[in-house]
Image 1 (cartoon, rainbow, N blue to C red):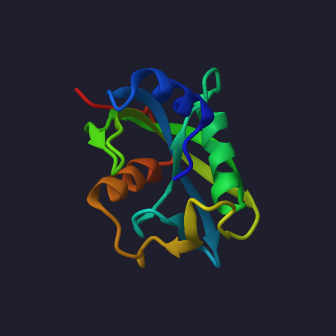
Image 2: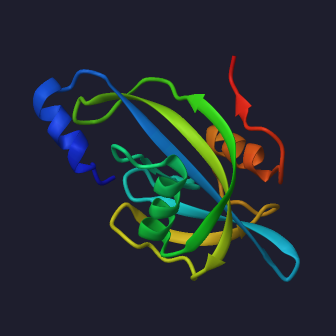
Image 3: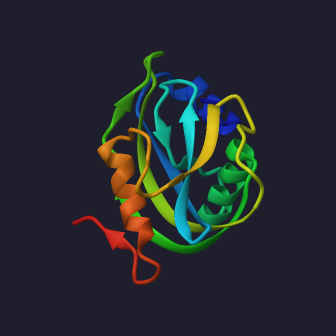
Length: 159
């Protein structure tokens, strides 16, 4: 996973100490022959299938960050329809010892154009999958997709 330059700069000052970072998840939906599909990417670092995820750059609007990540990681143009879920992920430690915790903003997106293909080195595959034929995905990612499937309503918040 590519590390944003602002995180590299922060790490130069704080070392491996925990960083609080804002992230996004883009659940991109489209219909193909009347059947709903969701965009997933296969991560190069873990091999896991996930919706597109990423880190919000300083000063960047969350929905803009999610759209940018979709284009960069999957070569797809999509527009946000609604914020679906805001939640804090558990603290994590990367293989190099860096620690982080993320505030994730999960968005429902509508596909506009482009056929999925990995747009950078963060993913090895990108594809749309029928909702009833998803590849193996974690329960956490499945929950993000489920929360985004509602076409309307307020975002979900954890208490």
